[in-house]
Image (cartoon, rainbow, N blue to C red; front, side, top):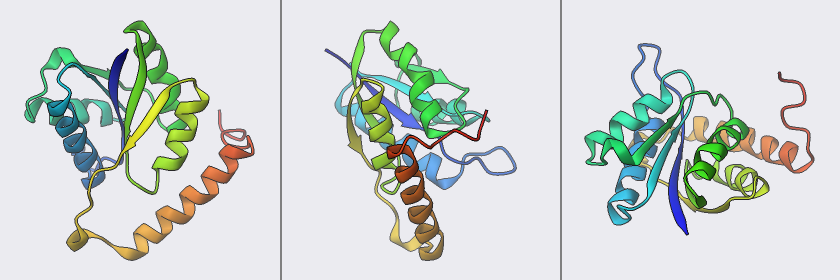
Length: 159
């Protein structure tokens, strides 16, 4: 049974540098890899997200040959859909999803629907940097997206 750590992308800053959520996720994924050096890391996200995750993981000591970039996904469902053939080609049937806590329920639901055995690992947040209003907005947005996913409505109005 091969295992992978699937790190879901997050926003990049306007200047092209990784935002704090992306950095947090990438560093957490790299730390998970340190405990499982046989695992593959799949860095997923468009707009430079996958490359930034991969670079942060390499900086944290993950060898380049243990990292695969998936640079096309712009939404959570695409993270899973585009990562799936990369995982299957390498015989991976179990993933550790790395994303933020508010995002994890929907990411795990989508991964399981795609046939992956998925467990969750959430990076710790720095309470000193936490912005409660932004966090509440993200939780509410994810709750609506989760419901839409459960009802099969997500993505219907997007190409």
